[in-house]
Image 1 (cartoon, one colour):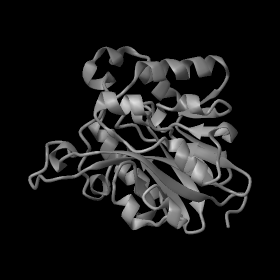
Image 2 (cartoon, one colour):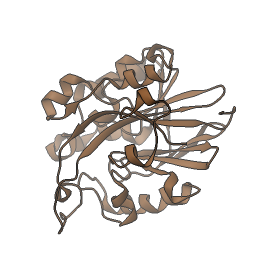
Image 3 (cartoon, rainbow, N blue to C red):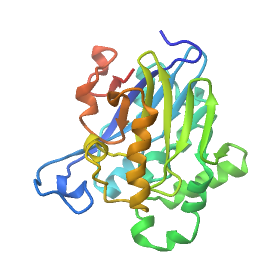
Length: 261
């Protein structure tokens, strides 16, 4: 049972896409073969607080980008007894389309974001297609509108949001990428998000190819492992292996939700 400063953490799988290993490592992979990618959002819930981490994308974005859309992320939240309209806090690890695309499904939430991510997504680098391709301009504009409505809280670096949960800027993948550190019954867990798409990225120090700053991405691998109390409490952002290493909290959630801690 979660207490006021200890959280239960779940991953919700909502989409997938077929890929090859050569697409998932900077410089390719000499042992190329199938290496699919899953898409997740996460939820951390204590005795008093509930944080949704990232909001995913919708069916329209999936069709445009050739992803297999399995379900709305809010369906997984519903199975955990959490209504999107009841959520008061959403942590956005960064503003790529697959992490912020359903922001509008959380009308009563405040969004927690690194200030430099907002500056990056609205700044001069977006004139380069290679960097803006993973953003959806309407999502970015929507977050700017939320900022004007005082629904965005911006951080600079490391910040404790509440006892037992904090955000930490790591950069690399994007200018303002942040990871989330959460106290659980098993110890400190780190939701790496796109600091490491797969377990292999950080365990083998092999960067993912969508990257703004390779050095920061490599340094982030050290940071996420330092912030976690043990190696298996680092949770990568897109690895299908997550669904096999952890278990569904209930049989009817099999293949949709797993409990991480």
